[in-house]
Image (tube, rainbow, N blue to C red; front, side, top):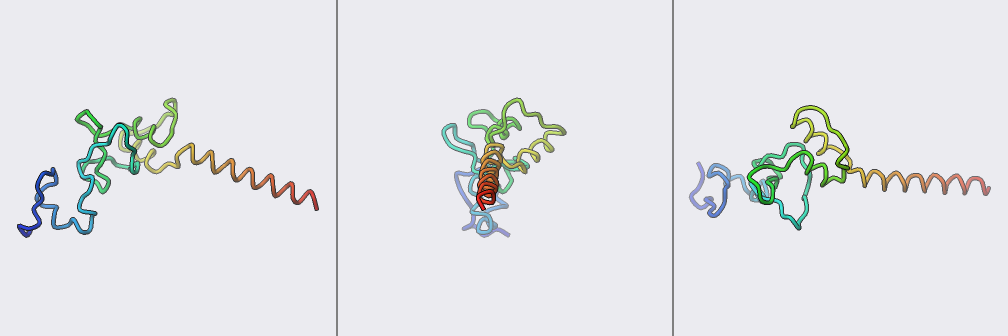
Length: 123
């Protein structure tokens, strides 16, 4: 049973959840909207308002963010194609390394390898 003191007001959080709030950051972001001038705190594999990262609602429309919107948040170009069901596509985006990060890491690895090769040629 939930203790009456656990009841939260001015929230869409279902009455059955508040007593588990201490384990879940007090359900911060549950049923939350993204902000136009804000950022995605994380791109998840299953964007559902009841998930651990509940801030997945579109800033204005009554819907969760689309696969394309999540992909844009990760830096995927609009021409990049994902395959499968909607859930499979969200999983692909959520599990992906953002392309700009992958590129930056690749360039740094290349730079280190070239420097190492240059140093070994000097000897």
